[in-house]
Length: 183
Image (cartoon, rainbow, N blue to C red; front, side):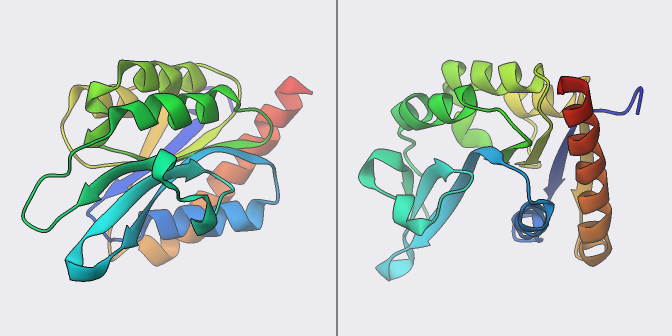
């Protein structure tokens, strides 16, 4: 396992199936999972709210305190940066155990220095990360993709079905190896 990055991030077009692969892998692994997920809850009129919730959370964890933004068709969402600090930083600070989930990292985090520092602290740590990183060229996202302990896998409509098993195998191996090093 020497020389193999500890963390695995998926990237690709919007709605290509990245988070679906992540959810499938997490449900099959059977290890403690910490970290976060971002979820969208659709509203009337084409609007949606974006929430930052615990990795093992559900839609019931979506509340006003965890709402990052409201998307309105035709307008760029106004990001509530304080949610990255009040919810995101604690979720990343509590990371331990089998696997850390970061689903997903994108442009909204660009103005939250404290959240970015928490992300890099986890990437520098001993627990494997499975994440999604948006396919955009931004300094924060570029730094995540080029972190020496990160491997990035591109998901496409053509390869997503085959990737599900490959990603599971890669993450399982990293979780087992990291557990042996810590234990």
